[in-house]
Image 1 (cartoon, rainbow, N blue to C red):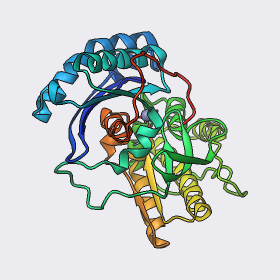
Image 2: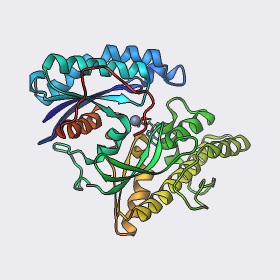
Image 3: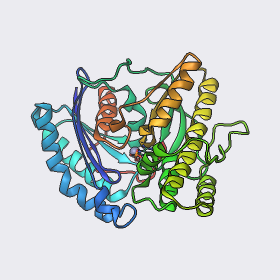
Amino acid sequence: MRVLGIESSCDETGVAVYDSDRGLRAHALYSQVELHAEYGGVVPELASRDHVRKLLPLIRQTLAESGMSLDEIDGVAYTAGPGLVGALLVGAGVARALAWALEVPAVGVHHMEGHLLAPLMRIEGGTTMQAPPAPPFVALLVSGGHTQLVHVEAIGRYRLLGETLDDAAGEAFDKTAKLMGLPYPGGPQLARLAGAGRSGTFRFARPMTDRPGLDFSFSGLKTQVLLAWQRSDGSDATRADVARGFEEAVVETLVIKCLRAVEAAGVDTVVVAGGVGANLRLRAALDEAMARRGGRACFPPPALCTDNGAMIAFAGALRLGAGEHADAAVRVQPRWDM
Ligand code: KG4
Ligand code: ZN
């Protein structure tokens, strides 16, 4: 089955074609980051308008790259939530209209299920060395809006083990970056800066690791970082050291909780998904920690950690392949528990 996937929940327009027999055929992404940069955050109305502008050209581009024509598509998948309602409606409207015109089924996908299943997709000609993991495993979902540990018992059977009580991990990266005067979007910039910092110069708390449980709390960390930064000499070198201390605190906290979660769930694999999964220090630390206990950590390629259409096409292919699709109504759910 060949599925066209559309992601438009926030500030990236993503389109992909996933073939259940051959894997990912093509994917294209347009980021609105520059559009929103001057406002220091995503402006919902501008995001919707830009999705309108970019979606059809991206669909055309993706089909051309996949070497397929529109009438070879067997189904359409789109992000139905959670996300910005106007942005979601653009993707849902285009997806539903295409499916109707092509007389193929369409399915709305949960954005976080897309992230969660991304590490399982097959990438044609890809460089992934490991075989894709199969359930059961523990998934660490770390994005700008979510930080969750999920026991994936089977595809479609998810049990929440723990989640953040306040800021998401990506949100902590973004807010901390802003407090330290880094330009929007701060998370990846802070990570880059941390790479130039010295380990151990600043040590911040590993929140909620001193007590049992699998929940997280990241909001206090940014205050600690702000205080340290304000009291420092304010030099570039110090900024990098503070960034390094922050990144180490987040990464170590995530690793400690992942190890607890695989223990609790009785599995030996942890799968990481969501934008923070692109963080190189997290990837290395979790790899090492899981290898030490005889298990493994799996990550999608960094480009498929952040928002993209491929994960939606893949999750949609699984759902459509299982016979699931909804009636032709254009419906989205800005708030939606997985
Ligand atoms: O999954 P995603 O693309 O969008 C959401 O659904 O939220 O995740 C975006 C988040 C942002 O908070 C961004 O700062 C963070 O992922 N992020 C990173 C890195 N790359 C993206 N955080 C830490 N290190 C990175 N390299
Ligand atoms: Zn996302």
